[in-house]
Length: 177
Image (cartoon, rainbow, N blue to C red; front, side, top):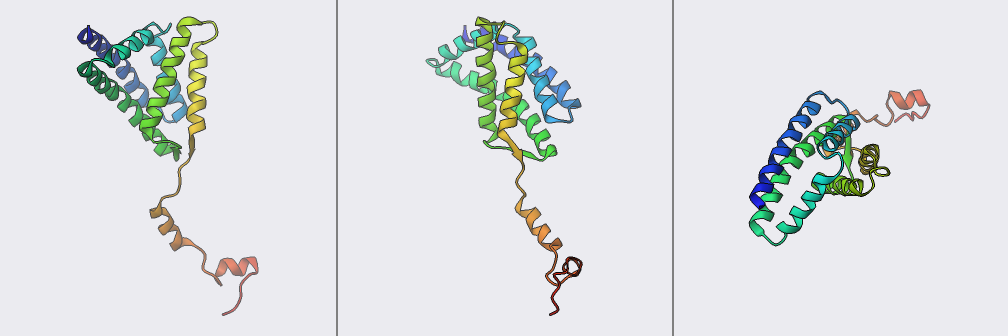
């Protein structure tokens, strides 16, 4: 049963990864990338039934070490792709996250999976749009402008105005030496 789940889960993941790759190739901003990734997830589990199967598999894997390790490895492969895509666009956008990406990955995956399970129970309230907007809000809440690096600071020191230089003269704060 574990092998069957891993095979089906692996095939479903490959389909999602193909979609993620298409989005990553064209995305130039982080928010549209995240929105499209969530939409792909929703297309592959529109009512949350697959999320319930995954939850059952996780419960079974907890007492089956080879299955647990295989499931962790399989999930890590898919999540690594998403993490790299988010890191790449975050780098270009000049932002960083308040927690390490591997923790962001776990947080966001758990949140989306939980929302999908809630959608299974209450699709009228837990809409696709709610899933999308919730993940975007979490990403925004965890993002901040990237801190300047030491290398940059060292470079900035070379550009800092010198006391008594032309900038001081323009401001009227120049004091002759």
